[in-house]
Amino acid sequence: MAEWIFWLYIFFFAAFVGYLVISGVPPLLHTPLMSATNAISGISLVGSLVLAGGDYDLSSSLLGLVAVTCATINVVGGFLITDRMLKMFKKHHEPRS
Amino acid sequence: MTTSFTELAYLIAALLFVLGLHQLRAPESGRRGVLLAALAMAIAVAGTLLGRQLVRYDWIVAGVVVGSVIGITMAVVIPMAKMPERIALSHAFGGLAAALVGIAEYARHGDGLGAAKTAALGFEVLLGAVTFTGSLVAFGKLQGALAERPLNHRLQNGVNLALLAVALTAIAYLTVYSADPRVFYTMVGVAFLLGISLVVPIGGADMPVVISLLNSYAGLAAVATGFALSNTILIVCGALDGASGFFLSLVMSKAMNRSFTNILFGGFAGASAGGALAGSAAAPLPSGATIGDALTALTSARSVIVVPGYGMAAARCQHALRELAELLEQRGVTVKYAIHPVAGRMPGHMNVLLAEADVPYDRLYDIDAINEEFADTDVALVVGANDVVNPAAKHDPSSPIYGMPILDAELARTVIVLKRTMNPGFAKIENELFLRPNTMMLFGDANKTLTEMVRGLKESR
Image 1 (cartoon, one colour):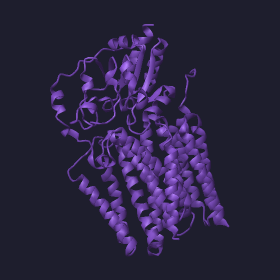
Image 2 (image 1 turned 90 degrees about the horizontal axis):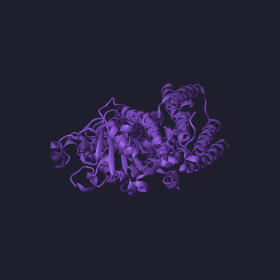
Image 3 (image 1 turned 120 degrees about the vertical axis):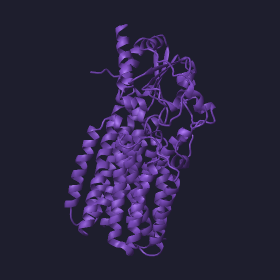
Image 4 (image 1 turned 120 degrees about the horizontal axis):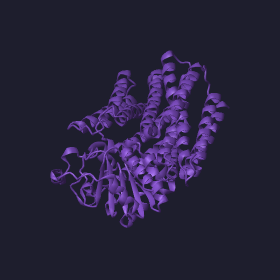
């Protein structure tokens, strides 16, 4: 079996499961959802790491450096800000100090 | 051995990502979900660093340090009101990372990749580049640096389709014939242009859909990267991101009763919108009501429904609004909030702002959950919302927003509208609700108006 067929299987099943799981997120949390999946798509960090750590040539390393930086911004910033948002959602009035 | 170690790490990470997203179903479990997803990311990165044969770490460390500093700073400093801008920027970063990895991969291997990988690489760079420039334009529009109104010209659709056709033809050529660098870099340039040209004509009111679509593109770019690099976790995470963007785009376009193609290629009909305009344009401007009038209506009400819109974000008046609502509640008035899916500039924008102002989330209602209640409500308090309460959507087939589900604020006994000026919204659609006899218009900065109302209520106690 061609390798790319195998990748397509993974893609379709992941997309389907993702859609099912995500469609259960209420509109209340749509901004945190987008922020969280944005952080998750920072997984391109993995591809960037291989590029930046491969020691191929200077231009590859420089592109890798920029890619690692961009992806890290999304991963680190994305998870932190999603958490900051979710922390704000409270059910009842709490006494304010 | 090392490969199976990495693959095992990726498998665990993929499961944790899905579990984490599943926890986002409720605010209580949401933070645990984010923690799971962050753990998954750590496992995937660790699996890559330990399992793949990496030669040097200096570039990696530099990138991670710089990225972390920028990421943490952005996460801590950016106010909630600027969330759409931050999301647009991070889509841009994601797109750029994918495009750069693709370009570097091509530069290294060129012809030696084989057809399937070359095609994947082509789509990776195309989607990444479109996401990058498109998100930057969206960011510029949200920031106000670029004109937020739709910029339409007759050739717009033709230009976009032509650019897309050139890019796709280039990818097909690279895949089938030879990986000619000139063709590849032409495609890269065209892709960057296409992102700009796609988003420039789209108006501020359509931002929620555009941001969702760009989210989806960023995900698909990661998927294509996964295909190009034979990397399972990239495919899985890209698919999750793509699915979330796709889902949100569907929710948004349904909430506007518009198709994807209509949003991408239509734009709002702009100034040429229908004959209904001509009549109301000649009508006299409504005289502004006084804050006293509004307070009388609010304090004698039993039930109030607040309808927030982008104006609330622009005026940053959510804190004053919450204070007013609390004072009313102390007087025995029930206060609820009605949230339209496309209110604001991104999905869930209003909910986040109100949560930031300590409004309990069980007071926030979706359109379906609350629309029937307006008829039994004494006061609808419309704060900086316009199109989402425009009755023309229900009865005027010539209106550009005809058919869009709206919040039935018009059915409340009294409607109080806080609005900066009488100018129509970004969609340039007149709103007859503002001219109705049971509507009070309070013109001016909503934060100032609400603060004065709060002061008025405190003094009259």
